[in-house]
Amino acid sequence: MYYYTMNENPNESEYNYDATKGDLVIMNAVVIWPDFSGRRSMQAFHATTRSCNVIVNDELAQVLRENHINVKERATEDGNFYYIAAKLSYHTPEDEVRLGFKPTDPDVKLKRVQNGEVNMIHMTQDDVAELDSIKVQRCDLVLHHGKKLNQNGYFTLYISKMGSVYEVNDPFGGMYDDVPAAPVEEEEMPF
Image 1 (cartoon, rainbow, N blue to C red):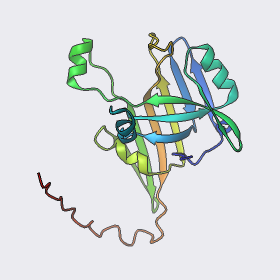
Image 2 (cartoon, one colour; image 1 turned 90 degrees about the vertical axis):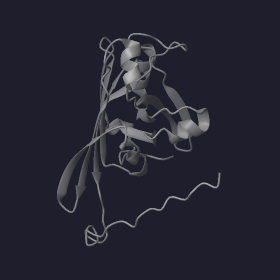
Image 3 (cartoon, helix red, strand yellow; image 1 turned 120 degrees about the vertical axis):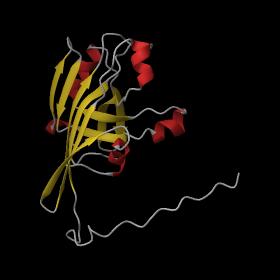
Image 4 (tube, rainbow, N blue to C red; image 1 turned 120 degrees about the horizontal axis):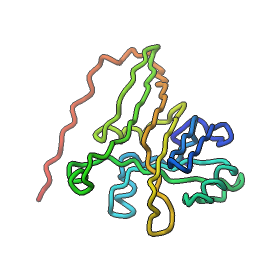
């Protein structure tokens, strides 16, 4: 199983669910199977859906099920675990016209620590796909659902805020940081 986070134990996470507002705050979340690029969903379902899954503890799984959140269960050699899906949705100008208001894009931040330097990066829909290829030390999430159930009778959870801490372990100590990357040449298509 692919973990996005170093934390692999949902009992080390802190949870706060407000069913009235539809907000679920998870501190030090256990995030698995990240697809922030939407590439895997495009291959499987022919539609781009940026998403990830979050493992939750048994107690929260029960509370979420009672509140119409689709909690899935998976068996492994080490026992069963529960998880929820969370979508990462960026909006287009067409959404504003269709909805009649400007929807809010998610607030996704990456705190990158390398060689003692700390950089806070605000991730946009153009670069959030980079999160698929790293493993972070910590991830905090605010998930939100609206008041309307989907066709299966569940609320869809969306990431409204996400903060991750990524510590770069450079075995060369930054010695090659100023070396420019090799240019990428694009091949011409034969048709």
